[in-house]
Length: 429
Image (tube, rainbow, N blue to C red):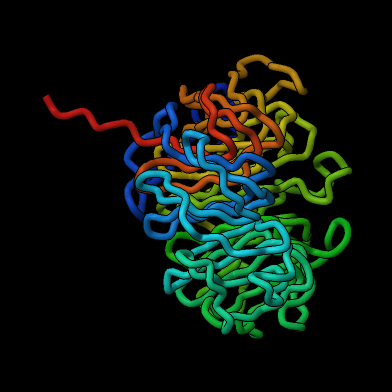
């Protein structure tokens, strides 16, 4: 179903008080099957990050790599503290912290698995293991060894990474890669770091400062890259804080898919950009964007999650919107059965709240699951201590990994790392 349907069909289901129109294929995952909504009871064996903030997580085989701005970790029982600055890793099978301990002099904001199983790291650092590496590096996830052949210096920070085949998409707040002008988005070779000079989305007309890519999501088939940030134009075309790119060829091509929903003047003017997170569904038929922006209202894009269909061309409107009522959302994972959102929200379904619990709102402190078809909050409500908010979700065979800046999930101690497992499948009668 195309999302270019007219306002009467695509207005938020929360606004209408009823379900949004069903979309064919909305729950059919094209990637690894995600069978059901995760349990609200996190496992007890994940380790802890005991200070700072977790910004990113990645799964490589049985190893979970965690990145952020922190310096201390400990085992699940809090009996064996170890020093890990900005990066740490543990086994997904049992939570054991590994010997992976590279040395970085600044925070990590983005992680991705390379085509050869290596670890690609983005952030705001200048040295890795004593060698010059500005904001982008490639490491061995077992030993922490730096791949010296990978070199792609960035003159700013890297906030988001995506890998497709041998290509690495690099998004952030910078103006050049390897000395070549690039406004916040570039494509490099995932093994060598060599810049693909033919690829340039030409992000421009930033609200303030210079253009940046805040987050991005690659479609499951690798053909479409959707980027969000503080830009208002791409390749000279009007694209308000969100652009869909065809990345199948040697050049970046701006798709004839657009939305005016994220207009730069629609939320608190203190934000040069209020879009924060994005994720495609497993079948690629839609993606969900989450936002900050302080303000709230039935027709506003701020502090909300919104679903967009990927099919069709021209102007698109949200299929549904779920408002928090004025509290920020930073992370999103669209799994098929659920759309998980995290931030420092208190409520969901809060269309009419203004830092208050409005009519119809439900309590969902810090983390929530939304129905992918209707957009309404599911019953899943583990709770978490809110802090600044969830910054990282990773789906894995065991369930949903969560990274944040606080130490409580489901009213249990889980410092900055947690895993909500899939519930056991009941045996047939």
